[in-house]
Image 1 (spheres, rainbow, N blue to C red):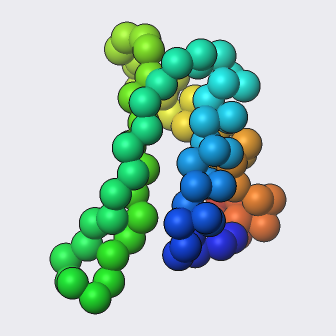
Image 2: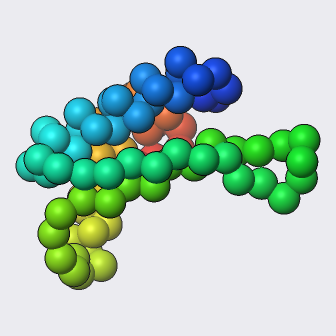
Length: 83
């Protein structure tokens, strides 16, 4: 899996996430990307997503996240770290 170091890689990842959200039924949503980290020399890409809807019970949310991970990440990542 790419480390998402360049703007182009990050933009491609965000697009893939948006496509996955549409595929599972979310027609609208907002995304916000930023870097975070405790050291000024090391930052990690972070993506926040806000979609229409209401409260989801923990079990439903867990299954939804698993489904999205399987749609977004390559099989090699899923095999190595699980979904």
